[in-house]
Structures are given as C-alpha cells and as structure tokens.
Length: 130
Image (cartoon, rainbow, N blue to C red; front, side, top):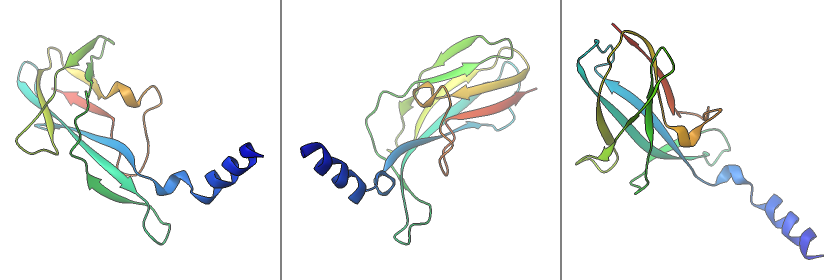
C-alpha cells in the first residue's frame, strides 16, 4: 500500500517541473591557434519548465561544485583543465594551450558518456584548432 502511495505521489509531482543543473562550455577565442593560451569557460545554470509547460527557462546557478573539464586531442589523448570560479559567481574558467592543430573536444565528463542534450546544455563542444 505504501509503495502504491509513493508511486501516485511521484506521478502527481513530475520530475520535469524540478530544476536540473546543466552547464555551457565555451572557449575564448572561439577559433584558437596551436600554442596560444585559450580560456575555457564553464557556466552552470538551472533549467525550469515554463508555467505553460513549454521548455525552458534558464537561470544562472551560483553553485559550489567540483566541476571537471577535459580536453580531448584529435589523437584521443585526454587532458584535465582546472577551472576555478571567477569574480563573476556564475562563471568558472581555466587556461589551456592546444599543442596540436585539428578537431578537439572540450567536455565536462560528469555529464557523459551520452552528454546532456537538454535545452541550452553544452557539456561537450568541438573546437577546431588552426
């Protein structure tokens, strides 16, 4: 009986209405050069459904979370990028130097291996290094 009550309660409060932590990754400059220092930024945010049920409202998240960011080289080598919170409490950043040209991936592995495709989420981005 308790199990049935718990199941009915779960149906009454859909999970889609609750917020989910997501991240957006970006690099500055957007077209980095081999050997040049690049800033990798991570912006955490909460996603909420709109009151009419449509998707989505994004709200910056000032969270204290041990974010992990990695760079994956064209050869598949994984390198950790240390990110720290900046003066802007909604932005985390770290420096990285791309050692070889080609197609790199920057990723937040906590959201892997499939990586979130929720509205606005960018936990994995592709970067072309010249």
